[in-house]
Image 1 (tube, one colour):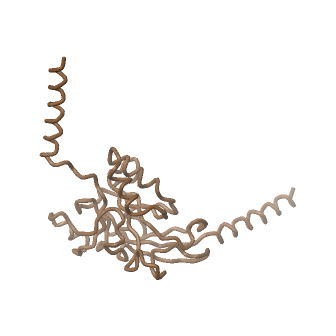
Image 2: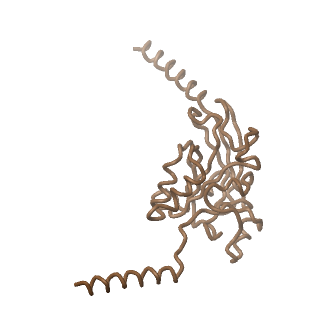
Image 3: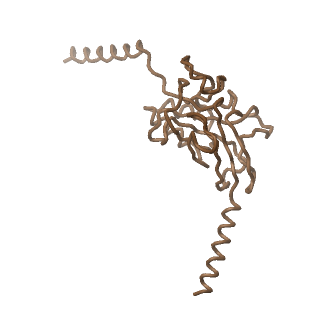
Length: 230
């Protein structure tokens, strides 16, 4: 029995070492100057879900998945389904969250399937995907989309490696879905550090009153035509 316990402990230790070896670490941060905000530039209501992963989908495919959905919730879910997720976290998490939409944290998960792949960050306006109606997809630094291999938003090429990425790395070309700007004119840029580089989530466009009126008139006309035929 003692021998069995001894060898079980050895096997468990070996498995732990293997598990530890099959991982890399990515630290990630967003300060007040590059916080994640709602589509109109206003603060997120509270801790909101962020994800880090990879996709082979194009920018157009990601955009179509959101805007061609029947509802915002279905659009959020459709976008998320395009990604292989490596790690999840929340805004206002980590060591120095200064405002809603900021974070300073990291993850150390297995790297298999993600080595040397482009890092994408998905951000939501709720703590769960099911509760979200807005989503943003962001990636890359100044060299995003270039083939020179110097983009900091790239998963490590092997295990036992640590890298760090920040939302301040993201420039306008790195906005895959969402926006890149400041506030909605209501002074919200103050909490973003007063700089025009907040990362804005994407939202369904609200129909203009004239568009709604045209739809209503069309429906009334169709109803009148059906009544005249009968």
